[in-house]
Amino acid sequence: TALAEEADARVVEKLSKGDAERAAQRERRKEREKEEANPRENVDLFNQSQQEEAGSIRSALAELEGQPPSTKDEIHAAKGTFENLRLRVLEMEKKAASASYFLSAYDVRATSDLAKDLKAKIDGVQREVLPRKAFTFRRRRVMRERNAADGAQAARTKAKSSVQEGGAGAAGENASAQVAVEARGMKVEAREGGVVVIAQEDATSDDIEIAGCKDCVIYVLAKMAVLRLVDLTSCRVFCGPVGGSLYLEGCRDSVVMAAAHQARIHHAHRVDFYLRTRSYPIIEKCSEVRFAPYAFSFEGRDAALEREKLSEENDLWSDVKDFGWLKSTQSPNWTVLPQDQ
Image (cartoon, rainbow, N blue to C red; front, side, top):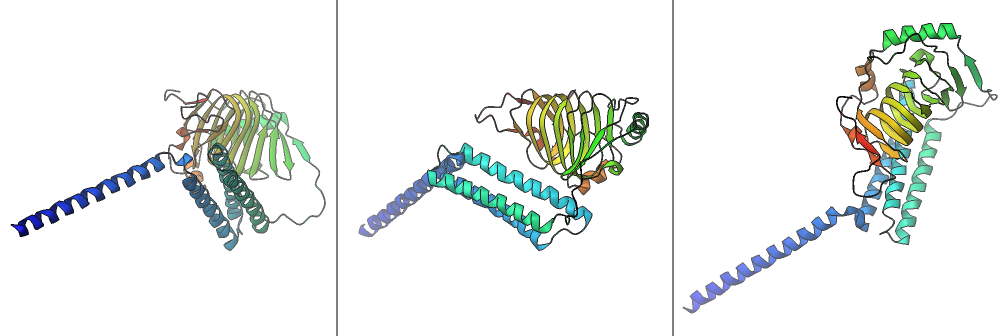
């Protein structure tokens, strides 16, 4: 009897210990789930994510240092990589600003210093692996205006032969454009009405800016590392793939079709975007903007997208981040474009 009672006591003790362990595991799991459910309010997780992103950026820079670009295509790709890295640092700064309400003053300073260090590192590596050409004499800004009649004919020919986007080519319009060749790249500006075509043979740089245009249909078919769209009104812009970043500032009542590694959109109002990106599009100070998948068709499209590592459709066009809307609810500034449009 005594032995039976002792055995029963051991069983009860073992069961009790098992129950206690299971209860402890449940509590630990609840705590872990609570932390993971609110990562923005967890200082350790926030700092860890910042350090991991910084480590990834440093690794990308080390790879560029270890294998500096030498061919034209490699240099083109490296320019896009540097632009992407700068945007990633900017995103880190945005996240730090959003998290400042629960970070200590020390953590705020640490994240700021981390971003400064990364930006300085990016600038230094870019100067090292993409050195500027030796200085000879200062080139004055060169402006050239195409002959209106010849430009119109060229635009008609190129629009017909190179672009199959239905209804987008307003053939017969005046296609003359002012083209500025500057230190940082190529600039097309101050156009009103007509068609502008930038083909590969027209491009003087892989850093292209289109600014101050109104009521234009614009095709950009050249190879690009960076594309900047500035102050466009009532324009339709159709772009091939961008090896780096698409920047848009101050556009209204327009349509933009583009594929790029990153897209940053500022002060856009009543603009429809048809995008393909490798990260989520970022908007700031925008209103009534709509998004849909990339839909521009042109000769050699698949090969061009493959070359710029943009052949995969990942639906990130619909994962837009509004940096001016910090609430957890959907931003009222953007929507998904209906499929029938």
